[in-house]
Image (cartoon, rainbow, N blue to C red; front, side):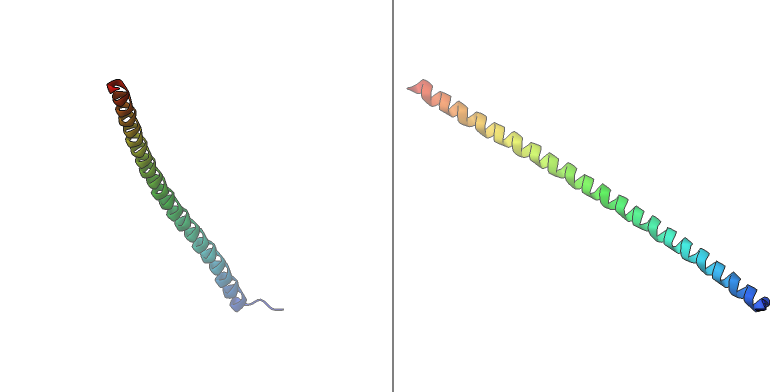
Length: 79
């Protein structure tokens, strides 16, 4: 089989296509990584907010329990 200039240009095109495909895949992968990092940050922020809410609820619950026990103690003292 004879390999003329047409064959070489086909090989160049194929090489270019392979390189562009690889580059595109790498760019897509980088974009996916960036999006995943953003999602991780968002989820971490939600976790921090939920932990804060839990601490606030625990504080309120302790406060209510303390008031309840004080009321009980006061009512026992009055008897």
